[in-house]
Length: 206
Image (cartoon, rainbow, N blue to C red):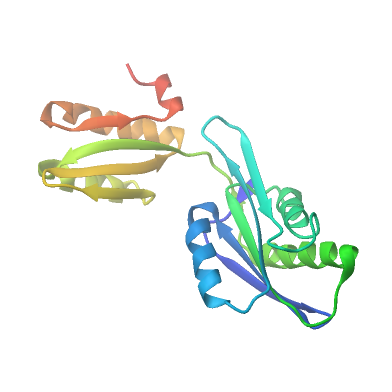
């Protein structure tokens, strides 16, 4: 399976209708959707589809025709993602109607082509499964954890600060989680706390 960590765009025109396609990491799916609705208020449709691998190893898929005839846009867009073996990726296709109806077959071809154009622009990489880990660090330990993340080139995390420290939500693959657990576990006597561990952490948590 393949994925991407960047947003890629493409543009096509078919019988005076303009199709703007956006291939996006799933982590940015909601924010990009809101941005596109704001940026394209006159677009007649914003079709979308996505594929996600959840923490149980199951592929979750969804799609929307957004007012196009049923099965003519969302499903072909999803099929294009499947065909490229993409995971944890979403796609949006913004359509500006040009006054000429494309028909069922024409719509299927147009949306499939629009998605594939964006895929062709993308720099794809091999997908690596990562899962969430939540933990708490007091301010006294913050710099040590920041240094660890920096030294290991780990950048998939968010922090929610409170009066005594921060709750982190980070994503690790199995190897990264093993290293982090070994590093962090020694600080449990200093008020560090694991709040939620990935399922695969059971292999090395004692």
